Image 1 (tube, rainbow, N blue to C red):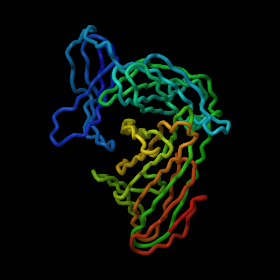
Image 2 (cartoon, rainbow, N blue to C red; image 1 turned 30 degrees about the horizontal axis):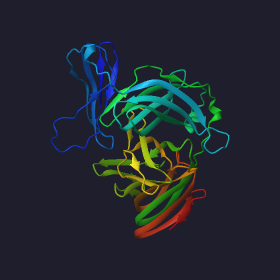
Image 3 (tube, helix red, strand yellow; image 1 turned 60 degrees about the horizontal axis):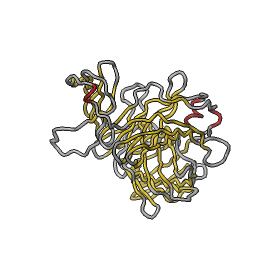
Image 4 (tube, helix red, strand yellow; image 1 turned 45 degrees about the vertical axis):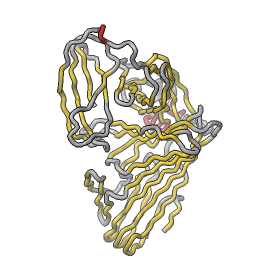
Amino acid sequence: MGTLRDENGGEIHAENASSLQPGAPFILLNFYGNSSQGRRRLINLTISSQNGMELGHLDESYTTRAYDRTEAASNLARFTGEYDDQGIDSNDDGFYDFLAVSVGTYVPDSGEYTLTGSLFDQRGREIVWGIDHALLIQGKNEMHLDFDGKSIWNSGIDGPYILKNLALSGKNWSLSDITPEVYITQPYNYSQFVDPVYPEKTISGSGQGEILFTFVIEEAIPVFSGRFSQDIVGINIPPISTPFEVNGSRNGYAYQMDGLYMPDKPNNFTVVAKGVKNLNIGLRKDQKPDGKNETRTWVTEQIVAQDGVAEAASDLISPGSYHAKIFGDALDNSSQVLLTLTLDKKIVVNGKFNLSVNTTGFPSGDYSMTAKSLNGSFYLDEIEFGGISMVG
């Protein structure tokens, strides 16, 4: 990824997510949407691995030749300037689950496109991030950013809110709106949105050997305007409060705690959506408090459902705090979508252990956990999972 800065300070961002072979000499960055004349400087050039690990960075890397306005292409992807917003109470409990902002776009070619943006308060503080990923036809389209109501409630800040950092991305390029304040919403009160509750869970015991834990969350989420959306905000990877040391490699991430070791494999995270046409998963890694890493965003290619069922899986998620959005189009006439989130993790036990699970961001729903002894002997002396069924 990189940024072009013109002589007036205007900037355009571009990204290219490609599968590379050893020795690949070039990666193409296509910059769209700036018709100013003059030279451009290529800044903040960064290459990262698939799991978000930064491999190289250059603050200043290249200066282009001087361009004239007449060289700018006329048929470019762009924002049309058409916006609207409304609170969405998807489960009819009297509180908004989302603040939905519609965004008008124009694209020169049909294909898959990703739209991202953030809501800010009047003092310039970011409140919540949103993402949409859709198959667009050539010409004008409407996309939707469904901003998580739990995050708005957590902010404790009343609206109106300001839409900023609007970016539209195609397969190998991105377009960023250079307007500082793209759109201002209606004057919502934060208390109109849903209030999240995140209890902590504990597992403790002793033993010697290996246990395979399978953690399952099943949730039926309502459909609104033909689409579904579920936010998992502030979830920690790994989702534990117990202090740990991390060891990362190309095969994944392993974690060491007192009396416990979590190897890098298996570390499978699977999302299954039933009653859908397609499934998308957007993932944003939050910046560390010390500011050592930039905020990063990923989105899956759109997964087309087979017989109303779509599945996505990953086993390479780096440690950190994340905002995940699971969304897509529901089957026609569907009133709800069934989401199943499954996490498989092997734990090597060596003595007494105490594992505190941080459920921040976990969705409500039916929880279950299976603990299967692969070898050795164990004694679980404390299981406080508040309603979670436990199968040994």
